[in-house]
Structure formats: C-alpha cells, structure tokens
Length: 142
Image (cartoon, rainbow, N blue to C red; front, side):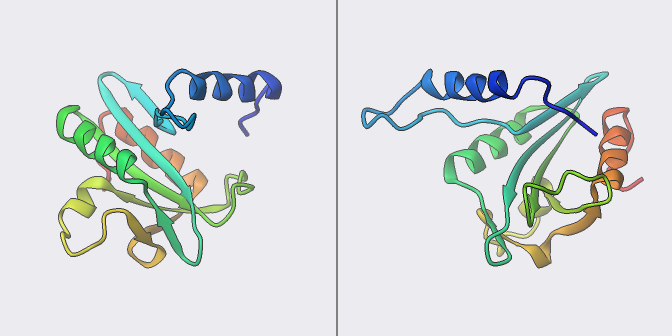
C-alpha cells in the first residue's frame, strides 16, 4: 500500500502550490491534475472525485484542461475516477472510471456531471494492472 512518509510536508506542499496563483478574492486560481504516470512515452492522466448522491462533478476549468490535454498529448489515456469514500485505500476497494474519449463519443452525456451508472466499476488492484498495461504500451481493452 502507498504511504505518505511526511504528512506535514505533503499538506504544506499542497498549500504552497495553492498559494502560487490567486484570484483577486484570494481564492486559488490554479487547478491540478490528480494523477499522471509516464513510461516509454505512454501517459495516463486522471482526475479523481468523490461521489455525492451517485454523481461526481467535474469543475469547468478541470474539464476544459483535461479535454485540451487529451487532444494534444500523444499516446495518452485520460481518466475520470470516482469513489464513494476517500478512505478506500485497500487494493480490493472499488472505484469507478470512465475515459475522456468515452465521454466524447457520447455528446448527450453531461461532460461535467458523471453518474455512477455510466462509469466502469473496478477494484483498485485491477485498475492498477490496467494502467500498468497502458503505460507499458498496451491497450485499455487488453
């Protein structure tokens, strides 16, 4: 299992990053990418969210950033991942995912309000294997 070795430094890093760019109101201007992995020129990028009433909301800025990145970054797979609980850290816990490419193929689907029923349920262990296959040059559907 992954472990944060210095929780205080981890939190301080997030606060530092958030303080780099601000709106005039003092709110954070920047957005982030929750996960990025690269191997041999293959990329996996993901935004993670928690479900509320069976739905995960993607803020407009993040959705636009990931959509543009998906259009421009070769050999990449972009995921939205959602969970019922951020405490789901066990490899056998389940998450739900959908790729940006899947969403793009269904223009009637709201691109920013993701319902659990349109996403793929998978254990974290199996998602890890899936991502490792992709970044090693394999297919999403292998």
